[in-house]
Amino acid sequence: MLPAYMKIHDQIKKDIDEHRWAIGERLPSERDLAEQFEVSRMTLRQAISLLVEEGVLERRVGSGTFVSSTRVQEKMRGTTSFTEIVKSQGKVPSSQLISYRKTIPNEQEVAKLGISPTENIIRMERVRYADQVPLVYEVASIPEKFIKDFKKEEITSHFFQTLQKHGYRIGKSQQTNLCSSRQGKNCPLFGS
Image (cartoon, rainbow, N blue to C red; front, side):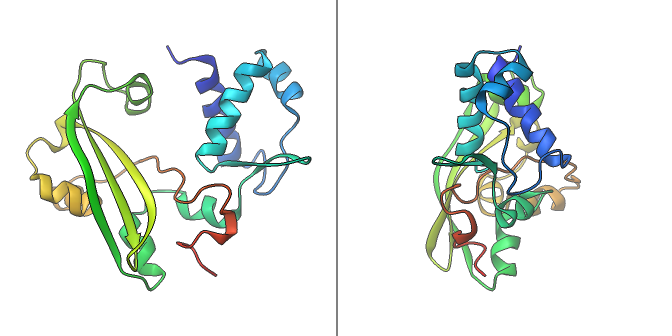
């Protein structure tokens, strides 16, 4: 069962995706949201903090919490590979593999991937670059059953393309936080 703060996290993201709150709009106060979700302010704060870390929300000192900038949010809707985004900006994409290992999923991965806690996943960590400038520290969690017959190099170099080449249609993926919420519109990946 998901912890209360993760349920709130998911609901707020859903509300933003369904345009209940517009990009740049201020959210209700923590007190009001805690009452709405019937949780303590500490639990609500956990959910908000996670959304801020993911770049979905941003805190403005003395002003409140707002839905993050249009540029970061809109680029991340749907399933778009990092390579495609970087190339669309006229930059050269590259990656450096940090780790690639088979492991069991954590609680959040079980919930997000809809798998059992005993199923293996591949957890891949990479630094992604545009024109040799590091932009993203990426952690990808992939159910092993989908990629067990693929070569490691196929997964680590061109993940989405490899899936498509092997006949998979990508219906849904979750991508978060190509830039920190502090960078907002100044995210070097999305330039002007």
